[in-house]
Amino acid sequence: MPVLRVGAAAMVFAKLSGLVIAASAIAAAVMAPPGLWYSRDRIGRGVVAGVTLGLMGTLFYVGWFSLGRTPVAADSPIAWSALPGTVAYVTAAAWGGALSIGDLAMYLLAHPSRPLVDPLAMYALLLSAALATFAFVGWRLRRDYPEYLRFALFLGLGVGRVIVVSATRGAALGTEKRHLRIVSLVLFAGIVQALLGSGWPRRLLAAAVAGAGVYGVASAAQHAAVNLAHPLGGRGFRHLIADSAVLDTLHAIDAQSPDRRSTLVAVTSPEIGLERRRTAASSAIRRRAEGSPRRSPA
Image (tube, rainbow, N blue to C red; front, side, top):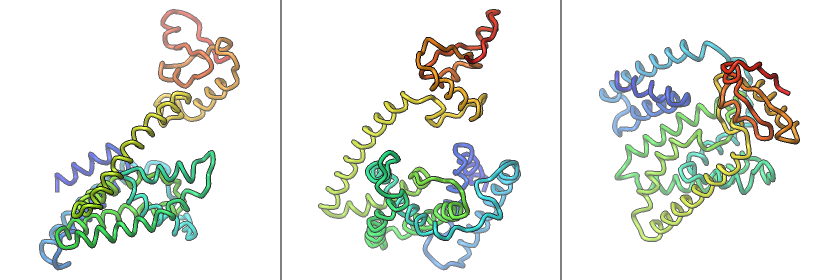
């Protein structure tokens, strides 16, 4: 039990959604072993898992959840119309997240600058391929790896249930594959094992992995090139000394300055200066240390 608590705490510290992954993985580990549902071993595992998850959930609620706004309000209505699309998203993203298939489909079909379909509709188009892959993997591994199949199933159901419930209750989670990346990596191991049994599936897997590798490198390079033209705050970085309102003001000043030499903006720290693209920035801390008067944004 101490090992489970430490592992879950480490996952929460690394990423807030780690609590969902940890809880789902612990529950899946209890449900995965074949055998009687009410055997002594499974009941013992369940008690350990229940106590661990109860302690982690209590600490999370007291130390985080109860201290501010939450993504889902307790009285928010259920948007039943969003349920089919969200289920399709969870299923397809868990299938293709390890190879960035969802990102590629998003770029081709649902890019914000030229959307052909809605992102949820795009995942619905991938749903048949995902279900066919799951059926194939289950059929190939059902005899030799039943515990793995059950673990992957319950892990996916745990994470997917949280996402589906949150999305249908109004949480703005988006449709990125990163929410299902861990589940997809677990499933990918089974896909590889299932395809290694014969010739043409092995070649198909090699081609898919090679294509995904080329796409991943090209995508990373393209994202880096595009990000160079955007302020630091627009790339996902969050400043500890400047909120969104301050950044919006800095970006507005920057956009309104046609000539880089026409405006000098005093900032409180060097990283805030990286929010500038058209205007110059000067550190207010350094200027005060040198005895120079602080300039206000022009």
